[in-house]
Image 1 (tube, one colour):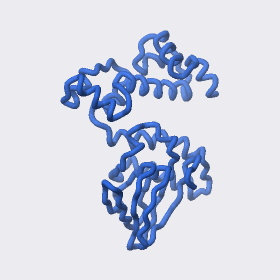
Image 2 (cartoon, one colour; image 1 turned 30 degrees about the horizontal axis):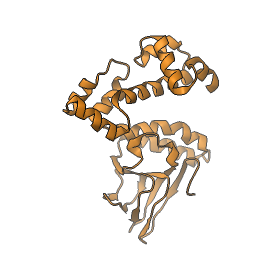
Image 3 (cartoon, rainbow, N blue to C red; image 1 turned 30 degrees about the vertical axis):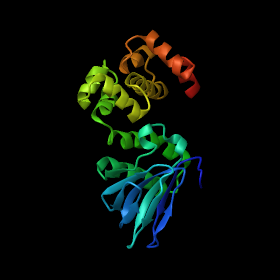
Image 4 (cartoon, rainbow, N blue to C red; image 1 turned 45 degrees about the horizontal axis):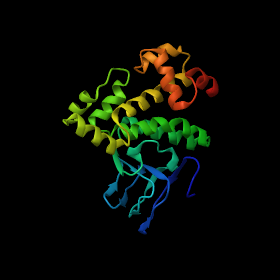
Length: 237
């Protein structure tokens, strides 16, 4: 199973035997029953009923459990981790209502024996956004929430209490991109969703993602995707 080509979701139990390994795929571990001790080079956690854990690819980890347990585990291929924040960080989360909803949907698929790679593939973009947004610095969260507005680097730097020049260097290290390029990527991803899932005119989509003119939107889309928005919509259907 290493490497894997699609997301795998399974109910899994763990024994008291301490194991250590790493794998090329990431894992998202959601609790169902009991506790799991897991240790990486930077974290030592006891995953209980209220904790979710994201394990990045190629991360050495040791794990075991001394009590009856069961977890819902998603194995996620490394090539699906498009965001830098998910490629090399171990992340833990509180099991809030949003994550409970995700867990319910996944379990429902498994229990009805209707599981398919396409089912979780459709849900994964939402899971990915949840993983990222709960860990993002203030300025990056602001971009995701206000991508349709005029966003300046100065305003973003102010949110982190950095001067503009230092902020751009910090942002590049944090995301692998400069702020303006990151903003464009967020806008393009949202535009692609709207092109796929709605019948909105191209101009309306351009306005909704913060690119006020259809011509500007088309030029940007062609530059990054190699085709026009209309061609992209046609190809997706």
